[in-house]
Image 1 (cartoon, one colour):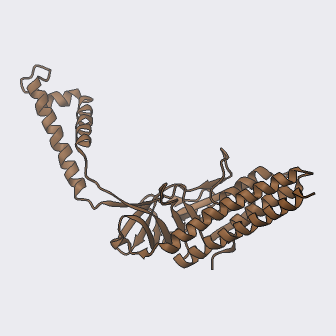
Image 2 (image 1 turned 120 degrees about the vertical axis):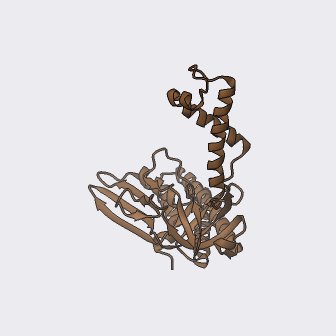
Image 3 (image 1 turned 60 degrees about the vertical axis):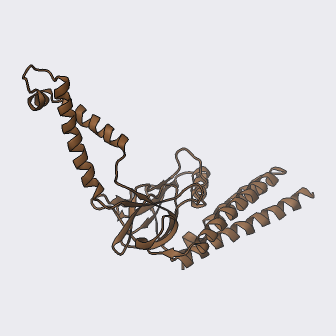
Amino acid sequence: MPAPSSLLPGLGLALYLLAVAASLLGGEARHGLLIAAAVGLIGWRLNYRHYRQIADTPTSRLASAALGQVELCGQARCHPGAPNHSPLSGRRCAWYRCWRIDERGKLDWEDWLAWALQRSNRLATRTNPPAVSSDDSFLLVDGDAEATILPEAAQVAVRRRRRWHEDGMLLIEEWIDEGEAIYVRGQLRRLEPRASALDLRLDIGAKLAEWKHDKEDLLRRFDLDGDGQLSEQEWSLARAAAQGEVLALQQELARQPASLLLQGDDQGGPLIITTLSPQQSARLFRRRAWLHAAVALACALAWLKLTRF
């Protein structure tokens, strides 16, 4: 079963907004209830959409998956030689999300609200939120096949979570371990290593610019008549040599297998990453959706009751 901390972020946000509305005086309480109802409706729509996307997409093996919207399962891995490390504990992991919440003095409701918003569909718009989420890419490995995951703006639900107190701060850390089983739904695309004609011209120009920095070596190689300058014919030889080196490098790159990328898009929705099974992930978003809907309905009924008096 999903961890309780992963199940109820939307409900926690809505209840917080209800508490704010209840603390208001007179007619302003109605405005708080309307805001809470609106947040509940938005949360219901977003989470129900994620639920239907997961439920309606069949799970594929990475080696045989078609490009486009896919549902994949595999293991999370860091790039070789480039592991991710959580800034709070320093643990090595494929992905992390951390919060620092100041507990000294009075409660900072702005930080708590930003934390709740980020736990609910990444709705926070604060410039310096208390949460730090890893945007560094990592790998999905399925047998001999692998794809690079670009987690920026992804919806992530994980099992592993730790809370502790340090120097008057509440520290919260979530992470995905290396080798942990993950489920990913998103846009699969292929990044071909082949270069275009424009890339070829730009690379040749860059190579010639590099050679110009060592003018003595450039003259030694291509100044055939020894007059200390490159004639048009000698410069043509230099361009041909640069083109030969660039083509050899591009041919080597072309022999490398194409890279697979997993990311979200505007049409298919954000990338979804969880450490749950596809069935558990679908239930997770379905529960979030109906919890949002229930709170939105309760707020709407409470607003109607207040407006009658």
